[in-house]
Image (cartoon, rainbow, N blue to C red; front, top):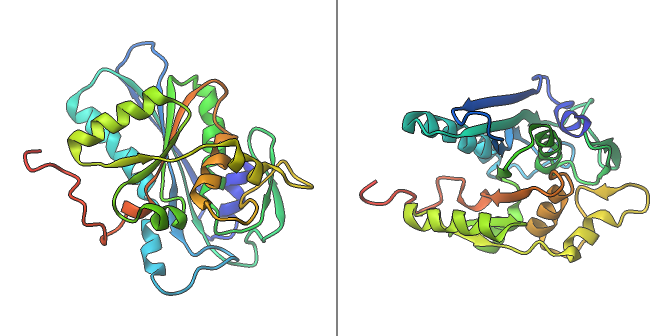
Length: 254
């Protein structure tokens, strides 16, 4: 998992890859939940502005979301098989940190030019998505505070969702309409994949060509690591992660 480890190498705190198993569904293939677990994100060498950097303690909100799902499953005693995968690390600037322009190789063998060390979430999720293939999942869902671009696009109104499955998205949208977790489907066009994958010396860039749509190119990046022929959904929760979000996520009678 060299893509994951490249993010972790700048921190004095050792990385952890957490795998949680909820197994009450017999021999059925599991549903896989993946959560971004960056416990503090400075941006690395491509350092963030100091203003509001304290909020980056919440860059593990995706990890917290999928972990709390397991608690919910256990409390309800539901019959299901679920695997939760959480790569945990800090993203710190130091003498050992990954540098812009470095090339790393993900678990599936793809080479990645790290053109911006602050686009680290996709690097750690890439290896987790690759690993999910070993579990032969029914479907894979990842949750991440992935891009500031998503906050710009949708603000705190809803979660941006990218998916290769109409059925999977419709199920989420239907459930969210009952709980108050609003979602909005975003495009996964090949246009964005080209921006990520057309690189002169590597398989792909972690940033892509300039031209906006940062949330879309980030999702296109992740799709390159999703197990083949697997239904997948990516939830970018950057806009709804913090205390500034006024949306009531639980209905009055929950």
